[in-house]
Amino acid sequence: MTLATATPSEEARDKAGASRSGSRRSGPDTAFHFLVAASALLVLVVLGGLVVLMGVGGSQAFRTFGLGFAVHDVWNPVADLYGAWAPLFGTIVSTLIGVAIALPLAFGTAFWLTAMAPPRIAAIVGTAVQLLAAVPSIIFGMWGFFTIVPFMARTVQPFLTHHFKHVPGIKFIIHGAPFGTGLMTAGLVLAVMIAPFMTAVMRDVFAAMPNMLRESAYGLGATRWDVMWKVVVPWSRSGMIGAIVLGMGRALGETMAVTFVIGNVTDVGWSLFAPRSTVASLIALQFPESPAGSLRLSALLALGFILMLLSFASLALARMLRGNTK
Image 1 (cartoon, rainbow, N blue to C red):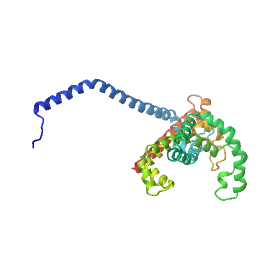
Image 2 (cartoon, rainbow, N blue to C red):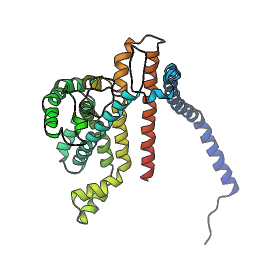
Image 3 (cartoon, helix red, strand yellow):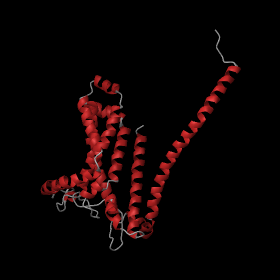
């Protein structure tokens, strides 16, 4: 038995053909390579330009107040005293409330659409979820102002105050006049806004899961709860983290919807029903009234710079969590 080997002449012909084929593709491939590289570089340049613009614009505030600008809670345009902690506190708390409410809603809806709902109903509901994600944020703000704010002021807060005002640990988060605006109202509106985005991502992740895994678990006698908790969640954990980060990013930078319902008071407190403010809402309200070159405008740009750093930190945390799941 002999082994077929290529002669030196055949190898030379193959190399010559490969080189001719490579030379024919070198022009389009090189152009495509530079186009893709330029696109990636453009994204980096734009992102870096945003960071530099905010940092340079806020340099006057950082020089005036130092690092204490990030932890100072006074925002007084009359006295030209500015601190970022009050709007940062409102941004972080309202975002956490929104994500905490939206996460179980998004997960349950996505699991039901992919594992329990009939295909025809799942298609209709899935389309409705996608349409809800396309609604402009200002519509959510108007809905929250005319629906959620009166409901919180007339029903929820009086009920909680009447029954839990003397309970230690709870009275601190429910006290205040029943205005209806505050962190809890903003968190509810944000939850309704970001839940469709999170649902769409989780639905795609669950749909990509091999059916063999679910069928094997059912074949071994697992219940739907067992399949969801022990099969679906571990397999799709990275995708779920991505959905959470997407919703968190939307909530951190939301402006008009939050402006309608949070009350826009630059104060810090643990009451979830007292008027507060966020970075985005404060910038939106006071930016048109800030003269060019003023310390107030610099403080607003410094707020934007800190908000971008906060977004980068949440993305880095998400990447770290995804790395730990592998």
